[in-house]
Structures are given as structure tokens and as C-alpha cells.
Amino acid sequence: MGRKLENAKALYMEGIRDGNAREAVTKYTGDRYTQHSTGVADGVEGFVAFFLPFIERNPVRDIRIVRGFEDGQYVFVQAYQDINNGEARWITTDLFDTDADDRIIEHWDVIAPVVDDTVSGHSQIDGPTEITDLDATARNKALVSEFLHQVLVNGHVERIADFISTEEYIQHNPQVADGIDGFAVFASALAEQGLEMRYEDVFKVVGQGNFVVSYSRMRLGDDQYAVFDIFRVKDGKIVEHWDNMEKILPKDQWGNSGKF
Image (cartoon, rainbow, N blue to C red; front, side, top):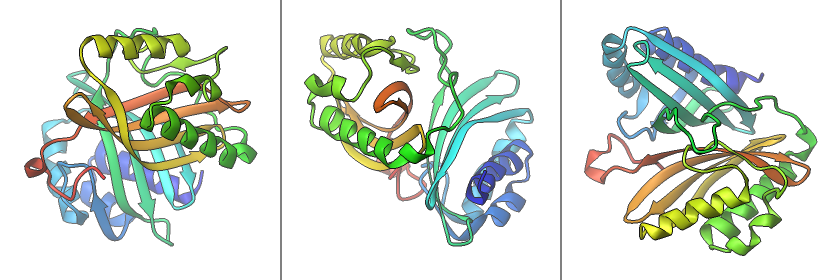
């Protein structure tokens, strides 16, 4: 595990789980800390102002880092949070930018509630976590980028089998069944409701080995969402998918410059 990933995990575990917000954010962030979690203001003081009351309100904080990796200056982590013995449970996906000293200087996140009753029977976080195939990182990122732009942005759904395995596609989106057919059924259900799902912008694509993560702006009907997608790639095809989405609030409710 590299120092960047260690710092990102420590900010979570020491700062939020263990309740040492000021000490952790001071220790693990750089000369600036630009924040895109819309309820949190920029900088050390913004982090402290948000998390000290959170820690006081929620004395029991079970936080686990499920997946994480580094890609150059960027760090990605996926976390599970159980607050006050099940009072609230969240899946959090986070992207961090770092400086030359591996300290965190910028942060984007998406937070969504845990869903127990999923269509596929898989949870939002189960499945492989081991990073393999390090020599395939660039190829896998290129595959996922092409999938995102061709299928999800430009709408060429007829090309889906060029990117997703027709033999194995494990789905962790709570509303979608396994396999390419599961994706098609989900899209049809949205259409029946008069809803169109379209990715408007792919903001970042990062990856390490067999895992590739994208952060995007998506439109669903009249609403915009910030979405993290996690893909596992094997033998040149996407074989597993996790995601996390959060509705983008009106600008007058932002505590900073926004989700992107």
C-alpha cells in the first residue's frame, strides 16, 4: 500500500471513525484542501466544522475501507459505514487528489444508503477486492473509457458486448440483475416510466490493475446525479460492476464549489 492510500485511509479512520477530526485533517492534508462533498466547506476548518458535530451526534461509528488503490496522484476508496449500531448505513465512494508529498489536496465523494434487498442478490460491496493484472492497467482504463463514452454518453447500446462479457457480468447495482440482459431490462423499466438515463460527462477515470473507477455526471429524467462506477476487468472485458450515485442538490445548497 502506497503512502497516498495510507493517508486517505487514515483520514477516514483516525479523523472520522476514531473522532480525531482536527488532528487527522491537519496531518494528512496539504497546503489546501478543496472540498466537493457539498455539505462540507473547504480547508481544515471546513472539515472540522462538519465532522465535530457529526462525531458528537453519532458516538458509534463502524467504518470499513472495502476497496482502495492509487493511480498516479489520485487515490480511490470505497467504504462501508454503520452509524449508531444500524441507525444509518452508508456506502461511500471517494476520490482524492494529492500533492508531491502525498498529502491530500482535493476530495470528491458520493454517499448513498445501504440497500439490503437487491435484484441480483449481491450486496453493494461484496465480491473481489484483490488487485491483480498490474501490467494491464492502461489497457483496462482505455477499455472502460471507451465503454463509458460510446455506450453511456453517446448511447450506442448495440456495442455493449464489445466491452462487457456475455459470459460473466456480476452486478452490484441494487436495481439491476446480473448479465447484459439485466442491464437491458433495467433500461426498459426506466423507459416505461418515461425516464432516460444518460451520462453527460465523464469527469475522471482512474484504475489499478483489474479495477477501473469512473466519476461522472449523469442525468436521470429531470435530475442530475454524481456517479462513481467501479469496474472489474478480466481478459479484456468488464466482468463485474459496482456503483454509487447521489443526487446533485441545487447550487444554493452547496457548501463549496460543487460535486465536480
